[in-house]
Length: 303
Image 1 (cartoon, rainbow, N blue to C red):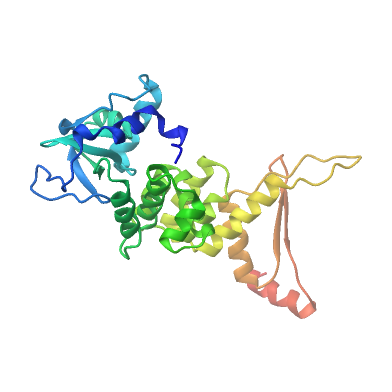
Image 2 (cartoon, rainbow, N blue to C red):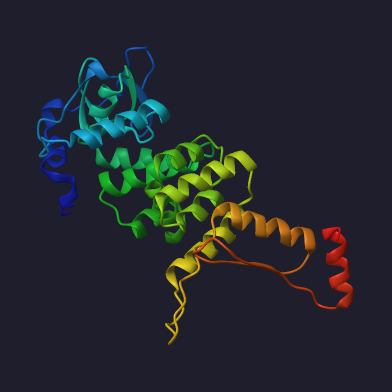
């Protein structure tokens, strides 16, 4: 089978080197046993860089930003290592995360333990691991990513091995594209996968993070986030045809404004729309179906 070029010379050389093969489960410094396909905390002092790493330079600003994120949220995506001696590990993938963790001042980081030169056993262990019932969505997504990258699988092959639809596998993998604060909230079960999938529809990382704060503060439902994401996408992605006398485009409603509209709809039990102008003004329209309906709305307004 042809190796994927994205793995690079480093991983290929490491896996083909039988001189450092460890065929038994490595024992950690704390006495616990780490099984291939699972994650364990490893002391940074026990980890050495990949000598075949083709990338020698890491952008300092990006590394510093990642270190700050790790300080705040922890290392969300574990690195992958293999055991090369007594309490000694070598990085297979994740050197940037390893260096950022050093900058963040961590003593231990989560790492997937790889038993070199036993690809079949790794694949079986990973498949078994992602089928556990107690995993959160991010853990499942990371397991799928490892199977694809380290076992050289396509999404279709992966879906067959784990017994899931290909679309389900793709949806889990998409979660890893979310900003780290959202991944952390999903990992810690402060939001659901439904919330996360709705946030994926908003192609703006700053707005995604703002909506996350609203979800956590106001305990917003998945339905409300889906409606807002749909409204945002329609206004951003489907502009109206140009007219001979074009008007300035209406600004996209903020999340707070969208919530106000939803609250008014719940209050009046009728259609409510808000048309804002770029000047700051606009029109708030409350629809009614009959004279009686109008009187009912007026009573609710307490006029």
